[in-house]
Image (cartoon, rainbow, N blue to C red; front, side, top):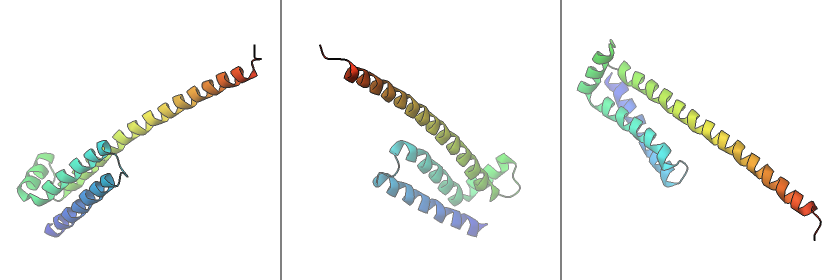
Length: 118
């Protein structure tokens, strides 16, 4: 189990570095990186604190403490996927509304162009 927790800590550290580098290069917006950073920090704390890991596994009713980070990872990713689905849905709706407004403006522009000059 120690080897698993060490690998998890290294992967979590890499995730932290990747997210921070992506924010620095403006590949990801800061408000979206916060959830990734919080999730990575929680996993890092959980993988480095054996007592917290065992307490979490006991509270969740898990037979093996190594299952606790996997359950936490799964729950975090489901929540993040839901959050990003909501964001994508809103962006899609905004995109449709913007396209409709553009079509209305083009229609008015064409009608002004077709109107004879007085």
